[in-house]
Image (cartoon, rainbow, N blue to C red; front, side):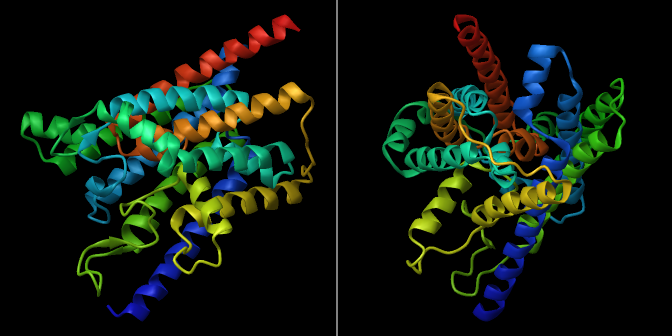
Length: 370
């Protein structure tokens, strides 16, 4: 492959990622898909409908991911969540910070982008604060703190961080077939659990669960199949085109917000190029905007009070720090990560849920004081 062909393929990969992100934004806006909202519905009202949406999306993504691996289209070991170094404390602490912050900020990173598309000026502020905090945790002062504290508590697994690989190695089984069977078992159970919900089987709920799950699968295909080059013409090494991490990626939004700000601020610097993360951030906003305009639900929204502003800024900062520390957000670890059956993703999601519940209790305490 010549350099010109490589550049052409990279453009195709970025356009494909952008299109899939537009679909995500449209579906999320149309169906009110939201992980924070799902947890809040359970804690405050005992309503599991939106959590069943989320469970179905994870199940569909899980089956799709390992079906592609079984077909030989992608290599699960090259995903960003299945590396051999298991930073479990970073995932737990970062997840808890992210979960606490997303409640204060009225939604996670993906919901922030969806709300920007629907006219929320509050979410614009959250986006900039979250992106800045994420960048500081990637390469700045919080990054130094992260690397020297929670990141040091980890263990190495030569075979990688995916649970099916651990099981296969422990029992001497074929890892590819074991992973597919486990994905069918766990993912299928999640889909069945979702469908068993009273009143769940409506078009809106099924559109959210199946649609979001397929979006995650499509993004894995774009990055791991379409964008994979076995031998770069200059380095002679395998490369995933458009990747910020150098590995196979799917949707995630914390670090990409930082990359988007970096690209915008240093736009004239020719070394700053469009990447997978940057185009997906833009795609989600555009998809949400399109849906809001079609439905007539676009509304400008601002902060209600000084306290509302302060809580959103604090929440955005916690999400930026926590999302990078945990290696992903509710979409990154919660959907993309869990679709790989990664142990770190399970830990991160546990942290996110615990942090969100604590934050909901904190908000109740604030309301009781007023």
